[in-house]
Every structure is written in structure tokens, then in C-alpha cells.
Picture 1 (cartoon, chains in turn purple, blue):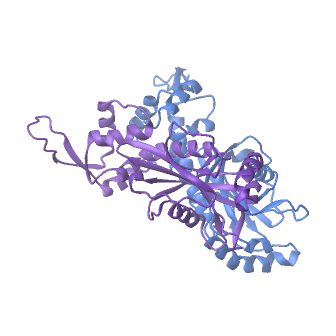
Picture 2 (cartoon, one colour):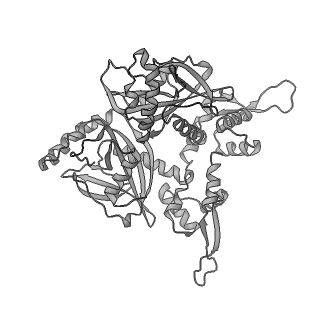
Picture 3 (cartoon, chains in turn blue, yellow):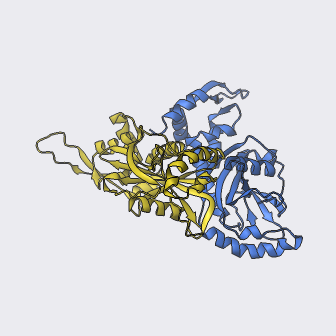
Amino acid sequence: MVRDYSATDWLANISVDCVIFGFHENQLKVLLLKFKNTDVWSLSGGFVKSNEDVDQAASRVLFERTGLKDLYLEQFYTFGDVKRNQNAIQQHAKIQEQIGESRIDTSFLSERYISVGYYALVDFSKVNVNLDHMSDQFSWNDIHDIPEMFLDHRAILEKALERLRWSLDQKLLAFNLLAETFTMSELQQVYETILGKKLVRTNFQRKILSMDILVRLEKRFLGGAHKAPYLYRFDAKKAQAYLAQVDL
Amino acid sequence: MVRDYSATDWLANISVDCVIFGFHENQLKVLLLKFKNTDVWSLSGGFVKSNEDVDQAASRVLFERTGLKDLYLEQFYTFGDVKRNQNAIQQHAKIQEQIGESRIDTSFLSERYISVGYYALVDFSKVNVNLDHMSDQFSWNDIHDIPEMFLDHRAILEKALERLRWSLDQKLLAFNLLAETFTMSELQQVYETILGKKLVRTNFQRKILSMDILVRLEKRFLGGAHKAPYLYRFDAKKAQAYLAQVDL
């Protein structure tokens, strides 16, 4: 939620909100920022310059917050209800009261914004989070442990999570989160973490193999074990063919 | 693309564009409007009032154009590139030249708009299209036969079509387009029309039955035919269970 008031070329009534999912060793978390001196948390948001694509604005916000570029970033939904604004006016009084002492202009918090939602997927162990000038704390929260959120940011987060889960199959997203070679069990763990539930091993394996998007390599050497698992590699060309016919 | 200049309470820089798909007897078409005295066609667009949800604005635009309410209407993507505007400035000169003679203020055509895209699905045989004051013609075009379009409206149309195809399975959309009871062959025809390709009957049937969302009824009576097809009914409760686990 950073707005540089020295620049005048911001579009009115438009914002972007980035849901930054962090993934590491089978944990899925989300990055939250806390407004100074309050218990109100928010996603990483920002505004759109008049000469900037909305996609570019989202990339910029993500870069400002994480220092990372070229991340997986997907637009998923636009939040345009009037009542977003009504919630803002209520929360604004509270936040203004606390932040206002530091002479930061927060009046924009009570204007109406149509917010274009994006989600990003990062390795949270690699991120050095930069706070904005309205925040005094950040946190990588478990997605089942979300505190009081600014505006409709909880709803935005839930919608992003729903889309992230869709994208596992629709965009074969899981393969962005694995090493170049991996076992079927490692792939299943990524799916289970993002879907938030256990999957039946045989069903999962059948489903993935039926997609025909993997190349099977040698078995992983595990010392004396007889049941060493096969290693697989994701095949981008096969994946393209799969995605081309995924709608039936 | 109607803007009432007597009202001052429109949000700046935000528009909605509705891709109105028309379906009837296995034909899929899209509603296009032609700018007066030009060869430039557009989707049905509009703007957002300051006290109106973006979803409401889309419903209003759809109602103004078709006279229909409570239609299937889904937000699918937001178009926010700066170059939308650059295209507008070029086309604007051409359109202004023609429309300008009728003293309609078209200056807004060269402003930058972030456009929230929606698609609707209607029975085109039931629609009486209302033109807006900038258009002199409408057409239900075959989706493979699209003329020169305003701005990025061709890209918006293609993205809508992609989402419509997704929604066949992801939202079980086809069942909005069928009578209460139907044969497997009728269901397959809806899928084929929207996907724009022939499907293998046995594969299609296996896939649909594996979803477990239908109730099989008696056979359709066809006089003396021995191979009368079964009738099916869509089961909303089963469908809910299916959709709850569709992400695996």
C-alpha cells in the first residue's frame, strides 16, 4: 500500500493486490504486512501509474516487497464491490488514528478502489521482505492461520488460493516448485501441500502418468534399498501437447 | 460503449466489456456492434458508476443491450495494458470523423481504460438487441468469422472463449444450455459446439459418466426403434460433490 505522493501520474480508483504465496519444504505460507501500531494486516498492494500496464504494476509491487523479479505471477480476479470502500472507511479511522501521528497521509485509504488481484509463488527461504512506510511488521503466515485483515483481503486471499489449486492441473504449476528431477512421492507432496489434503498414492500416480508429461529416468540410488524410487523429469514439449487438449 | 454525460458520477479509467455469446440449436455466436458509418465493430461495453459494483455495471450493460436479466455472467479477466489506449487514439480519429458529425462526444474513446471482462451466455433466438447511440448495426457473428474490432476487443473475445471452454468442466456450464432431460448425444453436441471440435463418443460418455453428476431416466421413446437412447437429468447435489473435489 505505498503511494508516492510526489508523483501525480497515478490512475484513480485502481489498485493491485498481490497475494504472495511462499513455498518451502512442503510448507505453504502467505506474506502479510501489519499497519503501524495496529492489529490490522494486509496483502502487498499498490497503485498503477498512468504509463504502466496493470501487469507491470503488479510486478513492481512484488519486486518492491520481495526484491525478486521474474517470478510466477498470475492475474486471477478483480474485486470491484462498492462495499470494499465502506469497510475501508471504518478501518481507515482506526488506522489513521495510529499512523496519522507519524504524519503519513492515509486519506487515500477511504477512497474507492477497484483492485486487480494477482498471486505469486516464491521460495520464502530466499526472500528478504522490505516493509513499506505504513507497516511495522511482516509475517509468513500459515494459510490456515490468518489474522484480522484490511478491507476484503481475506476474501482476496481465499480466491487466490482457489485459483492456485486450479492451476496445479490447468497450468501444471507444481513443476515450478520442484528440482529438475524428482520422485513421484515428491510431486505428490507438492500437490498435497497446496491442496491441503492427503491424496491416495495409486490414484495420484495413475492420474499424473495419464497426463503423459513426464520422462522416467533411472532409479534414485538409496544405498542398499531394493525399492529405490524412479526419478522423473518434466517434459515441456509433452506438457504443451497435454495443455492443448486439457479442455477435453 | 454508452456514457451518459449528464451524470458525473462515473469512475475514471474503468470500463467493463461484455462478451455476449449466443447459443441456439448447436450454433455458437457472439454479439457485435458496429460504430456508426465505420467498419469498426465492438463488444458491448460500458462504464462503472461510483455507487455501483463492477458486477452490477456488467449486468446493467448486458440488460441495456439485450433486455435480459439474470443471465449467466462471469468475470473472466481484466485488460490493463497501456497499449490498449494507444490503439484507441488511432481508431478514435477514424471513428470521431464519422460519428463526430452527429455531434456525439467521443473524446472518452481516447482516454485510458482498464477494462474488466465478463462473458454471458444467452439464447440468441430470444434476444432483441438494443443498439447504443454510437452504433448503427449489430450482428450475431460466428466465432470464427470476426471483422476488424475496436481496441483489443478481438483479444478479449478470444480470452472469453478460452474461459468459456474451461467452464464446461470446471463449472459444468453445459447444463445451463440443455432442457431438463437430454440424451448423451445432445450433451455431446453442446460440448462439441463450444469446444469447436468433434469428440469421440465412447471417450466422451466415459468421461461424463465418471463425473457422477447425472441421473439416468427411462429411454426416450422413438416409435419402433430398438436402440432408443437413455434420457438423463442433471443432479445439482451430485454436481456440488463433484465440483468440491474437482481439483483432484
